[in-house]
Amino acid sequence: KFFIQQENKIKERMSKIKYKIAILSGKGGVGKSTVSTNLAVALAKRGKKVGLLDADIHGPNVPKILGLEGYPEVREGEIIPLEKYGVKVISMANLLPDEKTPIIWRGPKVSGAIRQFLADVNWGELDYLIIDTPPGTGDVQLTIMQSIPLDGAIIVTTPEELSVLDVRKSISMAKMLKVPILGIIENMSGFVCPKCGELTYIFGVGGGEKAAKEFGVDFLGRIPIDIKAREAQDKGVPMVLMDCRAKEEFEKIIDKIIE
Ligand code: ADP
Image (cartoon, rainbow, N blue to C red; front, side, top):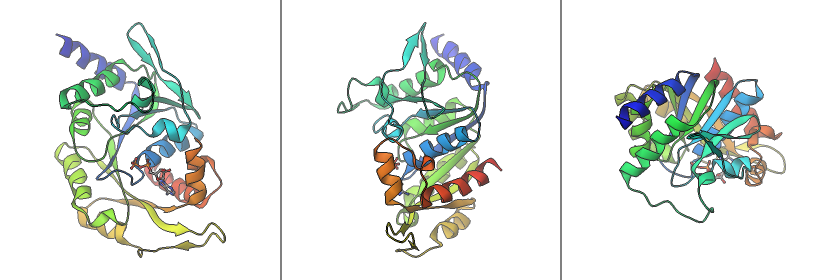
């Protein structure tokens, strides 16, 4: 009975959200949280109603990039999202006693937490819900893909990671679970010289398009390694709110996504 009740609640919540998009990556540290967060902030800046669910339960980085602190309010069994830069945000990081406490949960408990987020967070009406997932193809991705009708998945990778099987696994998972793949974003692609602004492709260029073609999915664009962007993000300012090369490239990608 609990399951059916929860199922209905999830349906009801999700029916108020136009587009539900999950961000996936094969490995950690490729910029998945960066893409999730900046996508959410940039869409909000364009006047959209946006929610951001940080479902990376074991390594929640979204609040750090947003400089977001505090606990979401729990009212009559509902979780009220925090808000920053016009985005409604829920992250495991804000539900822990302190940032040094690791979460050591097994699969079923993780899935339970995700389903609770989906059922109990009151997002209200949204244009977009962006979901940041943990790296890989585990319980969290499976739970999300099975619990809600996703409108799309975006795969984030780096030039180095492209040759690796993990990206392929993320794509296969989405395909198997009938989630439309919006495309691949190649992050940390090239390096912006902090002195002259010149963009250098240290590992060459074109790997992303090639891989996308091979996987039969769209290539959405590339974001360079930009020190200015990283420094800002370390201080809680997402790169799309900065005047930098990474932001310019990011905006082009967003044009493509909302096309
Ligand atoms: P993931 O979510 O894949 O683990 P993050 O988004 O947390 O990765 O990014 C890892 C680190 O790299 C963060 O410190 C982030 O600010 C930085 N970073 C991500 N993308 C870029 C970029 N294009 N330029 C500079 N730094 C970046």
